[in-house]
Length: 163
Image (cartoon, rainbow, N blue to C red; front, top):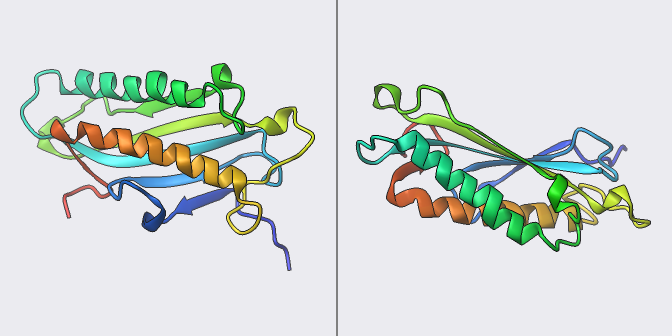
């Protein structure tokens, strides 16, 4: 029986601090000791009020989470020691809040792991030796917790409409 882990792990709600998001953690490389892992957080969002610059406000909030708060968290991280080389991407539709509907947002974080230079190699695994996965989950929950701060201005949901 082949015991290799999947390249992409869909994280269930019971592991998430914020149930209003969808989360995937994965790698496009060797899952036994990936040099880079990605965290994909997606959700649906809609402004609570008629905000003139709601797209700009959302961009500012996401930039603060990714480029300031997350960078500070990763500054001296054991598993992801190459903070300046990490990549942060978010996608907001050009026609944000068109027709007063929910908009799909995705946030992708690409983290370079210590597997690049370390003697000890860490797999991306949820069954045994879960250290790398656990750290990805901790970082994901950190981002998700910061997304909760946006709930004063936006409805956030894991589906295209409120439950």
